[in-house]
Length: 368
Length: 247
Image 1 (cartoon, rainbow over the protein chains, first blue to last red):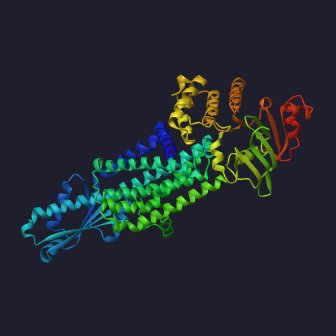
Image 2: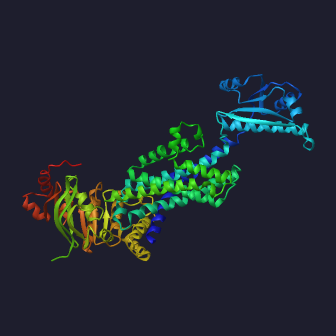
Image 3: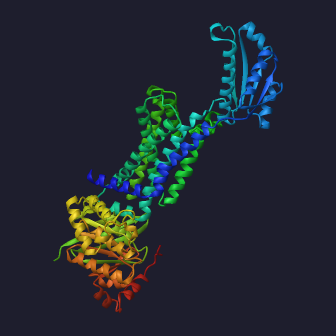
């Protein structure tokens, strides 16, 4: 136990004396979170939208005027059919189409309810979502001014839809995604590099000749990175909460537990990589190409999995960050409890055990 | 008869049908400086790995510091020191931190570490540099320090794998003075080298060719046996017999 402590202390020396490691470990999360943070708080100004007014009555004119009066939109007016909407989007400049159905005021006054359709170009989900929110707010503002709540027999409802991206891949999704990405990067790359570095320098040989058990070498390597990754996770979480004002709806403890589990998965990956290579650069390349790309593509935070060809959806299942992403989204953003994520948790656990078992087995074989 | 610290009988390591080490038998005595020579690929490293408890032999017997290589590799590890041709200390740890780390790994108590490292710093004349990062030291110093760390836990045997590679002649000479001191204090030195002048410094020298041990005697006797002027010629005559290509 004392030997292990000596070893772990040595690892901490390594981390804190290497500016590059520190930069990756603590600089990267801050930069990423701030970058994504600004990406998702960017306001929409002067967006081109098209209003297709099929009714042309007093109410639709009033609503159109209100939308024009706001500083957010440049309003184009044209009456177009459903099929032309897509063509409009493909031209590129129009970000959203607002459709008043024919007989809008008739519906409103006779049926008590009328619908406005907003269709947004979901290929740019952040902008689309913001536009929809703004438009909906303007319309409900109009409704409150003209039909006070006390006697509101008439209701205008908006039905919004994102074309190309039905699943409302909203901006909040980025944070759990970035978390998965950073943890993956830090744990996997740094762990594997730190082990391979010892092989490259020749110190691994000395360690193996020493009475220190080989398995303990792996544990001693993993412990500091596990702790540092937890600190890292806390940092990301605090940045998200205080800088980006993202509310953690679920249980913090559960959040930490699940993240600790994911960190273990990544560490196991790192150990496995370190077994298969003897050069730091190779280890870094494998962790980058082998981990980063699949994480970005198959986690589902940038590109929705549902829209991928089935073969990719199958592949996504073996990417641990996909499951972590689902868990964190559920716990952090939706506030769900463990009973909703136990399946994903089990899958992650299974992956961790498998990876760890292979890593340990390989490490032993190499010694014989 | 002197105490034997390494005993090998028909030690063999086979990879498929390739005999990396082919039935070598020899003894090493306590406090001896034992030169382990051979061309690249002759099987030195494999034999040394077996003796260090890093790999199991395919057949034959060997005991190191009285422990069996098959059954007690962990006990062997506690009683040996090791220094490789690659520099093997941590560059971004200070001299003292390196000593503390390796001392700790070998289970030397904190008090002992403190006392011994203070004495070591004085012996090496490194008191002022003790807190400096090892990476900032010149190579010669690093190698001497690595040797001191390898014998810091007072092992019975220290294995040196081409310890003086890339070091200038003056420093090499100093390095060998340290080896003599260690040997005088009862530590057995098992050293591989490609420098034939260093072979002359050994008490006894063995030469491996194609996995077999072709010669084993004191440098003086070997020179007589091969009617050679120096160890260089002895080695050359033996290495020429090799059929295998070096790596």
